Structure formats: C-alpha cells, structure tokens
Length: 133
Image 1 (cartoon, rainbow, N blue to C red):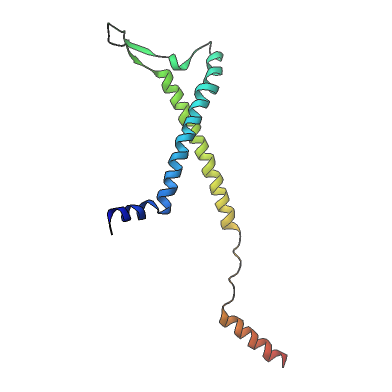
Image 2 (image 1 turned 135 degrees about the horizontal axis):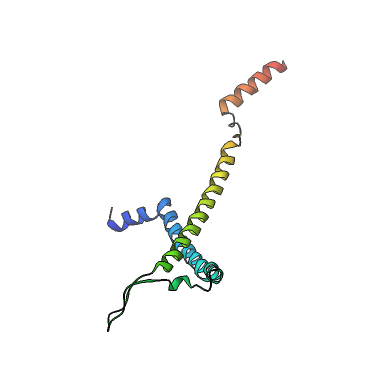
C-alpha cells in the first residue's frame, strides 16, 4: 500500500474527521468569544471601574529609549485572555453536560426486546398448531 493510500485511509477514519471539524469550529468559536469579551463585556466593566480600558493596562519595566520599545507587562490583555478562557471553558462544560444528560436518557430507556429468531418463530407456530388440534 502506498503512502498516499495509507494517508487517505488514515484521514478518512471517523475520529480524524470529527477531530478536524471540532478544531475548525473551536477556532471560530474562540474568535466569537474573544470578540464577546473585548467588545461587549470589557467596555461596560471598564466604565464601571472608572473608564479603564483593560487592553491598555500595562506595567512598564523599562521606558522606551531611542529605537528600543518600552518593556511592559500587559496584564490587561492577560485579564481579557483569562475571561476568554473562562467563557470557552463554561460553554464546553455546558455542552458536555447536555451530551451526558442525553446519553443517560438513552441508556435509561429500556431497549426493545430482540426479535425472535426464525427457529423460535417456527417452534411457536408448531406449538400453536398442536394446541389448536
């Protein structure tokens, strides 16, 4: 089997395709959450705290000199990133919780009895025929 055929067999397995879809959707979801935090949640919090823009909160370790930029610790951006993470983690938690609840309902529902085999059907017919005599 050639490399191309092996790769095709690997890539077409269900788990790999599911993982790829999850990664793509996760990336898009991450962008949505970042926009939610940066553009919707943080501005009102900043106004509530006296007009603070969290993306501009920095601790300057060394001022800029000449062509060298200032050395800063951008803790405001870190706060935004932590909020992004918390929102994504909560959304994933809720999605898994819903999936587990659905799985429990599926497991709790009794399975229908299996259909009788051909032999059981034939024996039942014979029994019924003998009773009717």
